[in-house]
Length: 172
Image (cartoon, rainbow, N blue to C red; front, side, top):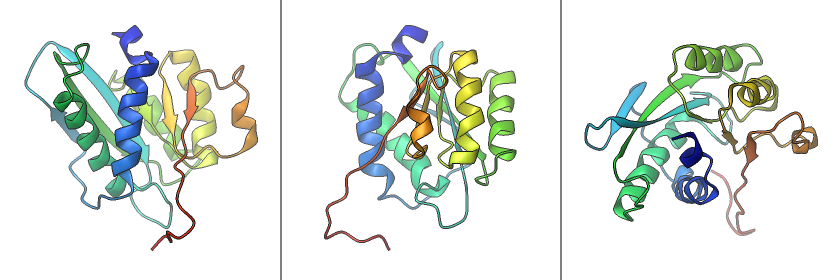
């Protein structure tokens, strides 16, 4: 299972769909979701993002995108993932250097995340990225824009993703 989650092709497929839909959705779901039919194989995703504020990556935008991404993965019939179901746990980071890491620690202790989506705020993502490396949990963040995050010796399992936006598109 861990090798599957570290597969660049699997991560890339999830990220492409996530990033495409993530900025275009507005609904938000309860804190725990389970997608696809019941099976013994589970991928647990932990989303740690702010629920409110003026940040680009808010939980109400990203959470539904991950659900759509999973549905897209199933629809494309990825053979390695067809027998898996995904459970999504969410936590409000509040863009806090305390609250975000505590959410990650809680997910780690409760074994409720094989992969983290977020945090995205620099002060929140830094400690989580360090912890995630020692826990062996990949962390995907659309934030983490500070150049220090490029040092893989310290942030081994952090993957930073950004979206290109055409110049004629404005944020509303």
